[in-house]
Image (cartoon, rainbow, N blue to C red; front, side, top):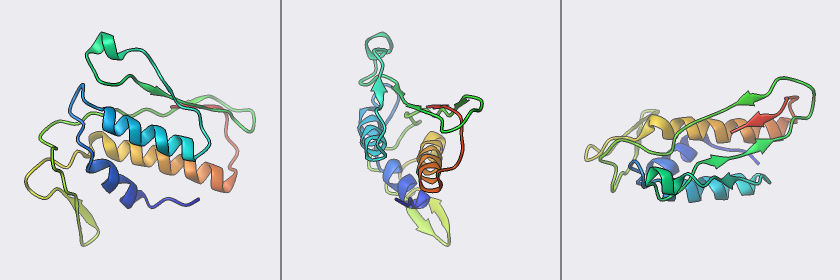
Length: 131
């Protein structure tokens, strides 16, 4: 499996996810992680935070001895992102001018997904990874 990080980011950017309403991004991310053969867990923090989803946690077992690495990103964005349509122009991604781009932190999520795909594709040696 290969991943186009630009397409991945643009798909994420289209998902509206203001604070405490991150469920669309969570559902997308859970599906993508399962496609990679992972078993994401959703914690029970939603009632405590007033969110519509908990945190997503995944542990990728290492294939060699090494330090545990933590990769983290958040699913919410500042507004407005409702109706976000990312535009790719001359190799740069912009918002459509009606909303913010929402790159913080959907770009981070796209990078994490790309790293996981690359690790699997290359069978690169790594210790445990927690996301």
